[in-house]
Image (cartoon, rainbow over all chains, first blue to last red; front, top):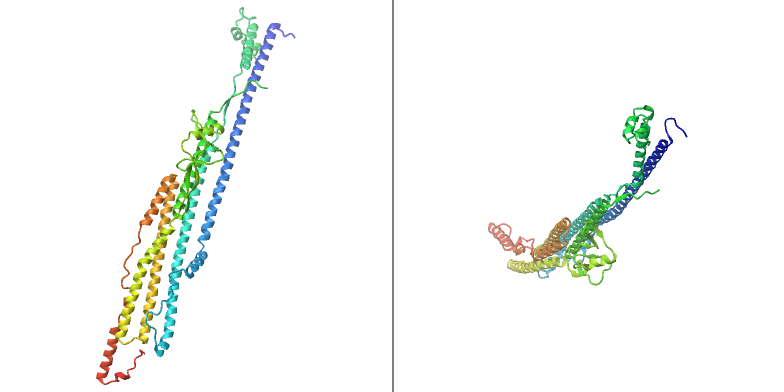
Length: 246
Length: 275
């Protein structure tokens, strides 16, 4: 191959420096790509880790929420007025209920022997006994209702406290999960490549030398770099003198 | 093509892992303390077996759950020299277990009676205070009534039956009223106990201090046990049932005498409705 104005050595230098620069650039580029790829993999792993922590937290929250719902269901059952009323009636009518069961206490005064008196008094006594028993039963029921609704209130209070405790667990777990999902990936930096850098440097040096050789046609001394500046004055040699092709 | 691996700096990653592990471990320990305290409070107030911490002996068993003395869940985790929190396993975990100071396993402690026996004793004491008084009052009033009726010559009359009925009614209603008051006292006391318990549980939730919560629950139970109900003497609650008979008869007789003096209907013809 023959290019006018360029001797074979200059041409070989140009070609060699171009190849060295291209090789160095390729190697460095490959290293950059490896680093970017690795960083992406690390980011992906971190995102997967955070997602795993998030889904584990969701399962924990769901379990705690189920427990809270159970507490609400228990409280609703206990707070049902019908249930409380039935329970109160059972208590009020139970033979062990002391308010109602010590039924009408009789025979405070000696029995009446006079038949006329007994006949006249009997209906009034029956009526009175029945009215008193009714009042006692009413008191027993009210008292039992008071007790039952007190127990209902206590059950609701218990459930409320348990729900709050579970709510505290949920909040605390969420706080811990915030740290779990703030998972930071490893930081990747490209390794410095001696070969790539040397090739680039060699390419640059070769290009400078070639520039110097071309420039020696115009100036007596071919000084690397200095010739290039002079050669750059000629438009056709500007490209070669610019320090290599990339 | 490979021209040398890129440099990977995992320090930030390790730090975030360490912080995540630390946060989860601390949260598990907190929940464990609260759960332990809640179980203690429940046993103290409701009865049942209070959980207890038994000193862990023997070799480290990874399948066993261990606790520290405050009821916190113990896990083989440790902060290394770089300040990173790590979970250990195998021999390192066993070594940490051996050097961790006293560790415990949870078990069932002594049976607690709860508040129910205290409430029952309070109810019995109130009945024992009021019922004998009421019976005494009944006997006294019955004697007074019998005496008044006898003095008025009305024993065996319908008046006697009515007054006797009044006394019966009064006695029974008074007894029901006292028992109802005792039941109301039980309700009030139970409610106060529950309020106290709710406040202890709220404090436990806020502090996560199971030991303080258990001590406060025991103090509260003792305070409730020592708190006596206000007991006032019953007084003459049935006295009115024996009153007025003498005055009524006197008035009646005075009327008869006045009528006789005026010459109106003879006293003997003024047939009383009292038979």
